[in-house]
Image (cartoon, rainbow, N blue to C red; front, side, top):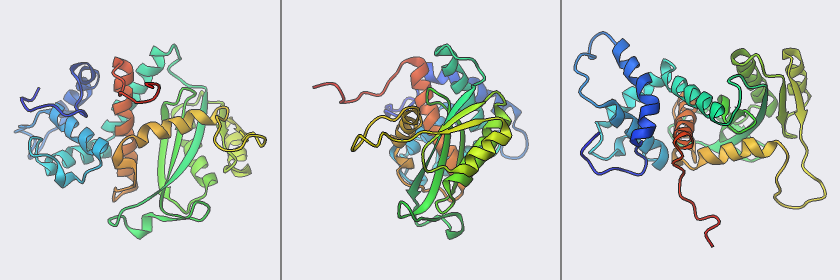
Length: 277
């Protein structure tokens, strides 16, 4: 552990113990030029990535008591490209499911999509206009299990329809989890998703809001994935899409979920003002 003063985004000893074996094994497999020195502590690299994810700062604004920002970003990019970030995420998700008494293989899922604005560094070719929400940016598609744990993520131009996003998510989920046979979506998803789900052996059900209730109210099943989106939006890097590539945006969602999952497993919840008065 570093001698510096800790930041609130740092992983605790218990949280680091959950993910350290994956990163240590990754480093042990690395060979070739530039890998011999390994002067930076892996835990500090992870802490720096979590700091960026939680605070939303640009990489070059990392505090100087972390490793150099170019080094941190290099690790982040390598872990995104070779699947290490998703491997850590999926390991933690499976542990969380087990802690809730669930089987490793989910049988049902919930889908939702969120359009967000992009920053100036995002190429026009990877963004678009969501005409319904009047947002120029990207669209995040998320598929969760029935307790809100992320099973599949896709990031596209905001101009892509919910149907197209839903089809991508169903394909991802069915490939990884062939046991899934049921899914719930909101009314933004139409017949194309239902028919595609049927071709995969997944019964897709559209859940409607209660027309007799005005304003916000909890909608059966849909509230699960909406809550998951709320969890990741606590991480300011995701308040807007700052990533040059959609794949990096997907990795940032996984990093935010890793932060949440490690806290759930070790029972280190984030303090909240709700219910205190």
